[in-house]
Image (cartoon, rainbow, N blue to C red; front, side, top):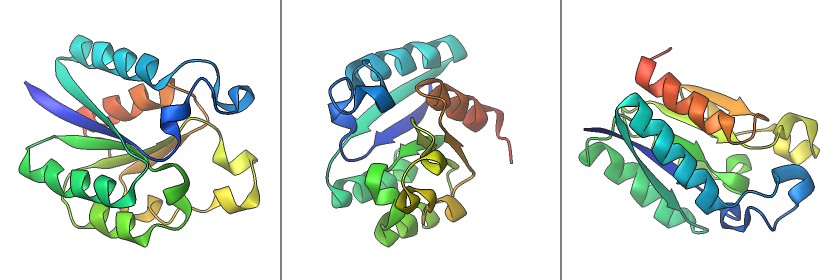
Length: 145
């Protein structure tokens, strides 16, 4: 079975507790089980990872190509705005990467408006909640450019 890797960055483990007025009341476990089921319905295995550590996220990105994933859905959290290391890791692989954000980062604080990672991704989905992850999975499967 073909596999897609979902990587969530810092503070995503706090879903359901962290700013529910922005992120809602569902948890990371809710998101992951939803994505696994969504993938099954499409004939894909979805593997979910979360870390608050930049280096761990970079390692998973590097390993993704060696593990023959067909693509990555990446929510880099706050690393979005300044992690050139994660940006370079994404640029170093040939897999499609879709950047996802649960909230509409462009309607929030000014520092959230810039992604240093977006220029090296296939695309970006923002502000659609958990559905954004599902759309990113579908974009990877369909190979949209």
